[in-house]
Length: 397
Image (cartoon, rainbow, N blue to C red):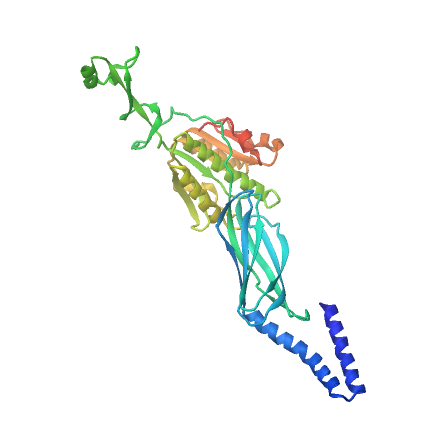
């Protein structure tokens, strides 16, 4: 663009000499045209700048991880002057990471028209992907002047985590809710308040389970099978506190959320209603959500991701335990990214649960051994970044 200005300035100088050397009217007209043209270009482009609006448009505010999704930059030119060249500088990044990706797009703008520029993006990690225009430059037809507009126009996309297979074990010998009202449709249990099935008597069955009224009608012994409550007190606590700001921050966060999602999905598949607890930066308090179905789980994970602040601030778990000191559970699973011995020892000594797990996300197999030391009453399970299935294959819930 500087070269264009220099060439145009040279042309004006040539026209001035032409006007001095020749007295014809043509030389004067030519000089006026070359002097007035940049002025006209400047003001028409300046007016056009104030009549241009830009925004991003996305079909869905959520997208699966590692999947391409379409984004559209809509630029509306309300003026009567066209723009032959516009240049948009686009940046996108996960707000939990400082790594910014960028690219440029060139396009024209017709007068009184809307230009829609489509492009595809994807994210390797879950979180919130922020897309913004650092700026949009527009040029006059002669490419002499450049005006900058459209700074920090942005939109956000929630990138959802993936579910990993969990081959753990569900314990059915734990405590039951005192007011259990939800029972398994596939597994019998010991709750006499709900009958699961009726079957013929087998030698060794307890006499108090015989259905005497029905047995008298059929002239054979019929035994009642009781139901298995699935709304037993079971909790997954996600500690989102980030203890390190480095290139591992985003992979650790991704592994934390996907571990939570995978364990919760495993419980739902085994008809185990449970509670998820996490710190909500929007409400500045801990959120408790009862997970009863995959649909509820999907909404909860989405709300969890959208609630996390870009600095990954999280209140320490001790605050929740202080407000809720009398926790009595069948199963308690604590998911964290660092073996904070203070919290883990508190869980080991004060959380009343039949099964207590500490799932610790670590950087490498070498650091996994450190996460397992010094805790005899707590099932400590190290999860290496990106290796969820192999790490929690033997978890008991």
